[in-house]
Image (tube, rainbow, N blue to C red; front, side):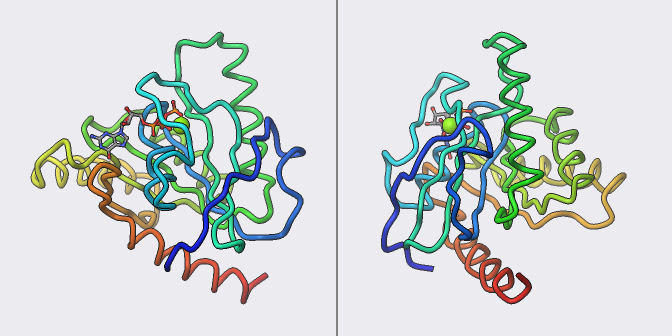
Length: 202
Ligand code: GTP
Ligand code: MG
């Protein structure tokens, strides 16, 4: 898929504020600092579309970007960020979960996983929750420029092993580096195909 246009639409605190159109959308979630906003920018080929920060907890709202005037990329706040009050964090997570479960136009949720570290309980639990809630997910391993091919394969194998204890089938998986623009075409092709299937079934 070729990106002709990518524009910020709005930031929403909860589902009731999200755009009231019926265009398909693709959201990005994962722990704070995993690289969600960077992936959104990589896909859109615009370095300043979503705000990136080395400080975890940068994205605090549900951010819609419209692509080619046809579909949305949605940048979400991270989970597991310890530096805000637990009350605030709970409110974010409640609002985000409500969005994930009830947003009828959400075609796929990309769950980002930091490829540099061993499998994290919080990521496994989040994906399990999404699976149980019937939210379609894909896995995206991020920051793969930081490790060797061998190390990356080990991380993925470790995740697969743990997930296959609970999952019948592993989700679609992408290997990415926003720094090296790796995985861009693969994700965009998947999005294009998903939009076509979504149109047929909806
Ligand atoms: P929050 O909004 O705070 O939850 O973070 P986020 O998940 O949106 O992460 P963000 O895209 O802001 O990136 C966090 C940090 O990781 C920034 O310093 C990025 O430059 C860095 N980063 C993101 N992607 C990559 C990557 O592919 N490779 C490397 N080496 N660094 C990356
Ligand atoms: Mg962000």
